[in-house]
Image 1: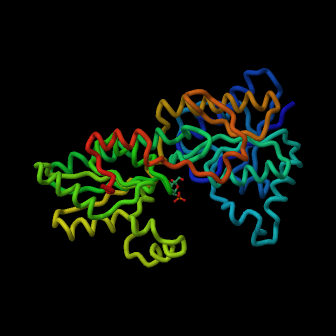
Image 2: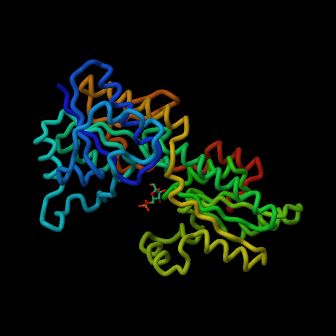
Image 3: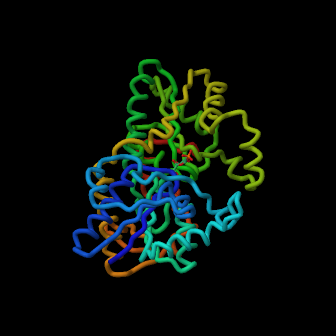
Length: 358
Ligand code: F6P
């Protein structure tokens, strides 16, 4: 009998259910006796022993379902070692619940923060397997995370919709794209949606270059301009500040996000009507795209295979289109950002896309 715990942690995304279904299908089809324990709302469920026993039927019909059947929450790594308001040691509580249920392993689906805690639990002696989820695609050790391609679809659709109204009105539109500290989503959705200017954290912008790129388009007769701006995009001045100064600047800013700041500066310099659209959490919502359904199923299947082999301490990821296992200690605490010299950036520039740095 194998006893497997499972939880989804951090911001949700598409294909979490597809990935869990993949794990469970692989285990049940192996013919082995398996018990699945699903912890509710991420690490919180593991800390407070809030779980349910699941059968294969619970995983039926969820391949296409968005969100997570287990629920999720953010349990920040930086406070994981602090006692909870009632003085409970959270790490010890997680270990105790794992041991009480006599689990063989825990499958954890999550992004960057989740992986830090997963690695901590591994160091504490638990058998851990993780799956890389996040629309941000910023997890080290895997070429892709599931949820990303679905979010690219949503964000691209938003840019497509904006295109028609931007062209009717001859306006400038900024579509602010999620992605946390990296620009994978903005870059891919921006290129897919035909954005004229793409601003990403990895290439700090100069506002005069951004304005210059808009003016050049005007001179060439283009009546509108679309900017895909990553939520983490920053100016050269901001990038040159210390972390402390950056925090202060954000605290004192009168804008809800970077896009509104950029919009104001564009209006001041060009006088052209400029609007900001923020698709926000819609980018994490809805049904996973076909790519993510296949990808998450493959990852889940390999996670099931690792459990059957008793191989623990790995994230299952993808490299050069092949599913691979990556030691958790190599993944935890490392960010995968875009190399500004990557060929995709050069190709985008050759298509006339401005990154606001020329
Ligand atoms: O990490 C996924 C993500 O959607 C980021 O792109 C975004 O910055 C963040 O989560 C939003 O977090 P929350 O759902 O807690 O508002």
